[in-house]
Amino acid sequence: MIFSMTITTPSFPSLPPFHHSSSLPPSYKHPRITIHQNPAKPHDNSIKSLKNSGFLSAIGNAIEEQEYRKARAEVIRKGTGLEGYTIEGLSIGGHETCVIVPELKCAFDIGRCPARAVAMNFLFITHAHLDHIGGLPMYVATRGLYSLTPPTVFVPPAIKDDVENLIELHRKMGNVELNLDLVALDVGETYELRNDLVVRPFKTHHVIPSQGYVIYSVRKKLKKQYTHLKGREIEKKKKSGVEITDIILSPEIAFTGDTSSKFLLDPRSSDALRAKVLITEATFLDDKCDIGYARAHGHMHIDEITEHAKWIRNKTVLLTHFSSRYHIEEIRQAVTKLQSKVSAKVVPLTEGFRSMYTS
Image 1 (cartoon, rainbow, N blue to C red):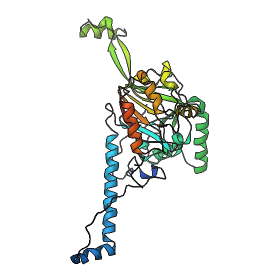
Image 2: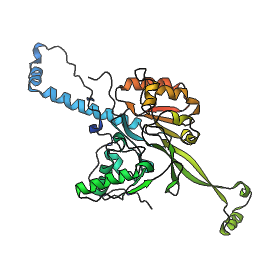
Image 3: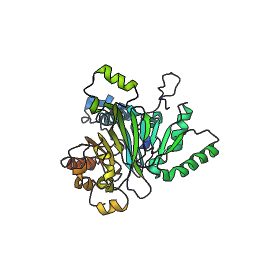
Image 4: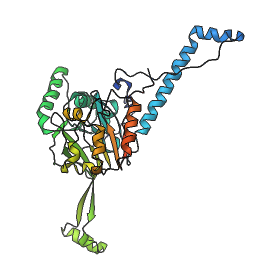
């Protein structure tokens, strides 16, 4: 049984915000805040002395930092409230991908192990590229450092042995305990996370072995043939050993990781394409890297989502893994164009991307 733990003791070290600036691409710079001042007048000597002393420069830097923090907080707020789930994350193609759902204590891929992911009990790895799995040893080690329960880490069966070797290597190099429950979960298999929550992998199409995951809510529904019975009669049948309910699985959240558009046409992806929230990639947005280029590299072009929009029955689609070559404005423009073709609400995950108006 997996226990979730909430740390309330004051001595527990506070975690830095999930969207830490160290996770930003090397090219990212904080937006500049300019202080506009009127032309100097004869009686402005005191202001001139302040400028020469660097006092106004210090004020400008303080305001810049304050505005930057406000902007980051606004980005985080905009990433919440998707069909009742608080979904956070950072996903920049080739740099890092980690998306978390705190209500489910789940993280999808681990990127460089952002601090907010450490509290998640379940980690679902889609494939072995470093920008998706590189932070795994740190994730396991940090949970041990904070005396959290060993996490349950799900991986495609094809990479389980390599992941075990990776963890063992870090145990030897660091002379530390790294405790985890490593589960090789194959496509079509079901694993119970809680009594009301299960997960199933589905096939994705990347350049190396990969798979996505669907999280299902579980509820029991009285079988149709017993709906006419009264409470006492239902209880009597239940005590006699008769199975009076059906198990209903409802797909809540689907995460693809890196994949080509083939998964959109695969009948086995039907549950992923009808989950409340589909978290999928749209690495390329323009003609400089066209559909053929995207397919050759095991990724999706946003035009392919438009092309196959009729198969998407999700309520919300969270797009991730945009190439770092794009600015926020380009991403939003492409998403606006897609929104007119898709019935689902389309939301881009743009944390970590810079504006074309910042130097």
